[in-house]
Image (cartoon, rainbow over all chains, first blue to last red; front, side, top):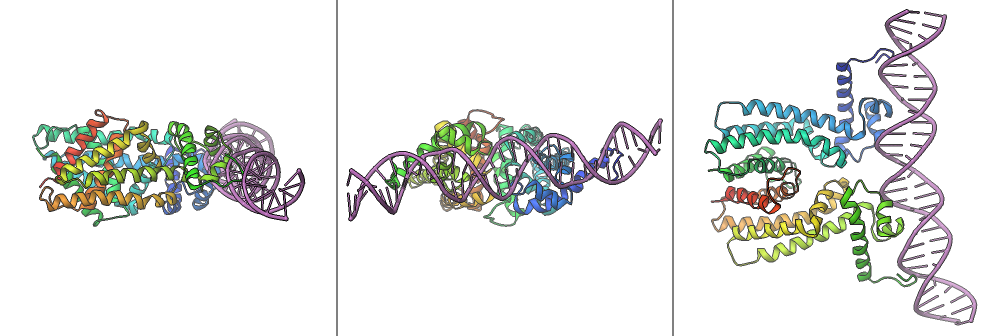
Length: 197
Length: 197
DNA sequence: TACTAAAAGCGAACGATGGTCGCTTTTAAG
DNA sequence: CTTAAAAGCGACCATCGTTCGCTTTTAGTA
């Protein structure tokens, strides 16, 4: 990277992604909190301060990519949610997309989700808004299902939060009862049957 | 506490409880990870090393009491689970006991549950066994419900984990949709209807 | 009564951490 | 050739969790 010439925003974003994927290799193995900035820098082949040139704090390294992925999930889910089919079918499709995200790239999003819950409380506040956006998307689908007579009259936000909070721990567990796909399908079955009108 | 005379195990346990409830006052406000050993010691009116005389590590302070409460919950739930009534009714009663635990002492167990998820990964392994014990209790109830024809044939461990993992985040939320009682009741409704034969 | 070992309590010190400061090198503009 | 600006980064800082070893108190023993 030549000095003396300021980087464009694209170059900064590209550099962040490069650094992230390099540091991810080490922290996904031993845990984000268990990995020091010195170790992260070493695995990216840069100096410790370089991390601070691209990220405000240590927590921001994880937040930046967690939010990136959560945005992608919300957008992908939004596309599915806009299909012209019954709400319960679309909800099921959205949750399949969610599972795909959880499992992609050696469960990167899954692991980021788990690590995000272990960040400092201040850091978690930053993520909250984007989590709400995804919750609201599911809430909309559940509301449609209620209007269509497919779902009974439950609190849609509660149901949305119930579903989301169930996802990661049910799939990412030390006591699996089947494949991730099977566990998700069964969880969805129980949930959707619980909503059935 | 007189020196020169070794403390009995009861005295040690009593002392631990005293210290814990003193340190809890400060870390429940600002987060366990956000509170230093120096601050914990100060709030208990003891020296920093005194904490190490009673607890092996910082994490052990929280683990000791989290496990204590989880044992109490499992025992209380066990008593309810042994009643002579339909399994679906008993499951509902057990979850009421669970909510009582989550809400007691200004949500002490709830907050410990949340903080426990932010401990070091090694520390979390320590808690796992006791978590499994509670999961197995609910699994047993669900299995009975299936045998009684009250529940349909789902994987009982998956369903148990689904329910437990739903509890804390649904009730302890920044986006409540009612009182804790109401949110729990509705969550249980959705879940039990989902299991219905 | 004096001595001694053992126990509780604890502050100084240690090695490690996240984060900052300011230096070095490279680059383009004038 | 000079200069300002930018990227990169290691030494340094304050604070952390944990350990070491000291002080005080106590009871048992000679």
